[in-house]
Length: 178
Image 1 (cartoon, helix red, strand yellow):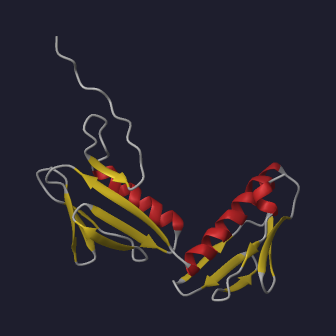
Image 2 (cartoon, one colour):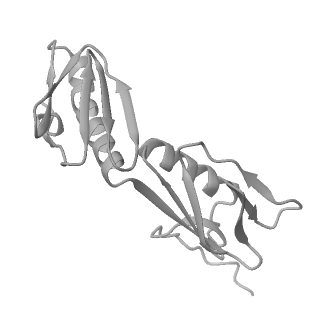
């Protein structure tokens, strides 16, 4: 039995929830989200909370049970508060800047790397060494932050590259002389 699936989701006052069959639509101060869920689970909406139940007692329905509850919870948090990922850039000459809505990274390559964000994602460069990715959808924010990190992942010897703000990079010792 899923412990996560059993929990109910409380709806903040500023969030409106609607459902049409298996499609759930949420609207809040940060934006709108909608998602279609499989018919193996049913979503029950009351005035102050959302609960999820299985329609069939199969292994696949059990798998979707906890997942559906987590996805709806992330949607509620997204439209009410939003999500953000912070990235830190370490290294001499490595920097980030904005060019319109696009992010331009100078990471030691022969060319600057330009990244075009999805329309629902907002990027903020606080200083040349820190980037904040913000948005309503948790999946898109994490995916775009991972794409930025993949331009120059942190290396284990000097720790140069792009890493998440609280990420711990395991350092290796260099070669020892004779």
